[in-house]
Image (cartoon, rainbow, N blue to C red; front, side, top):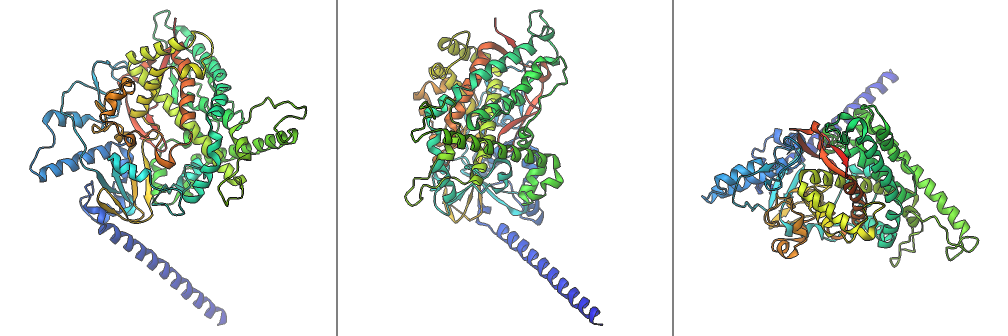
Length: 612
């Protein structure tokens, strides 16, 4: 009887606990639904028209995940403006303008019949060509509102003044008005400058910033990249000249000579960031060399750290993020979880090796940094070794350094962010060179004017190449590696006259903002010349309408690193090879997708031929 009584009591307790949990969940769901249903944001234009339970559960999540990057947002803006115009009894767009805007962004990037476009035709936002004449269309709706899964609120803005307000807000306080709130990204890019907020971020930035001085970056990049580029270009040359694919016999070659530039640049950028930031040899370039020497068309580049696969967009991943169930990723997507484990082990190894070198160097140096024989150490320090010795000099900080765990987080951030942004920039740069043969010729002319026809190209000569600089700026405008940034409000804020509640995600669509006709003349045209004639550009230019490296206190700490690295990579390639799209890309529409950076599906395949 006693045991039965205990069992009954236990059953009652379990039942009460389950009832409590169910009641709490129900109240939480009800609260979130009512907060969504009666949100002041609902009066802002957007795609949500019917505030039903279905709309609250699903929102526009599936639309955003299934359509090309930023296509839904562009369409929603157009619809919002047309509705606003209808309320005022006016026609927003002329017929020809409607026709043109219908093609913008929505259909991916078309490569036509040969992967090239005629530079005399008009290129629209998505890279296709159009000869339709139309009136200039301006986005007049400053804010757009939509919701994702379970009523998650988003505000999107294309107003540069609103962007300025968001990005220049004070970020170093314990509770900033706008935070990144990217906890779900820490598994991928680490708990570093990209993902942390408030005073923790400010402390990390203060400690790290001095290490990113110009002279260190120039010396480190110049001592690493030219040698790697000699090996990289040689691998391309060897492979392109197999089976007559150099073009001397007039043949088109075969699939053996197709180059998946995303994986190649990913491998190259991994070796560069490994050497410069960590003095670590990932030896990813050996995969490119193995590919170059192989006769087998099936040889594919390995992904040594799982970086490329980890950073590819995934609907399942985004679903788990929105449901705050990222911890289940290891069960649902085990391959992605395996990539995270590989990356974490590599980071631990990198930090351990760098710390050992740092201790050995300290043991061999005197107080002036000289070796035991009074001579300077010849081996240059890497970025991570500089951070071991970096102190927080803020009054009251007691010269504290970053902890071992914090250094691991920043190492992961540098490894992923430093590798991913530059490799993506190089992919879109090659794509734009092929799409615009005239520009390719002008960039080559600029390179040959300031650099020798043979031998390594130095940063000193690259700094003189104004057209190459303008070309890269234009690539960054039309194809920014990071196509959007998101902030989350921590309190009520006033934005463009609207009251925005806490926990609202404010999205800045860099990809659209940098194509906005209010801030750019002929925004869909690829025109490097706009960066040479500042008088023409400044007529519309707004500093917060050009954000390839973000802006404000949380701008990218490595933007100079990325630009110098891209120049050192691209200049030797352009000087050595004629670039063309692979025949396999004929008629293929490239769908833009984004997780951290903008990528194409399918990947861009090219062919190269050594210049005479």
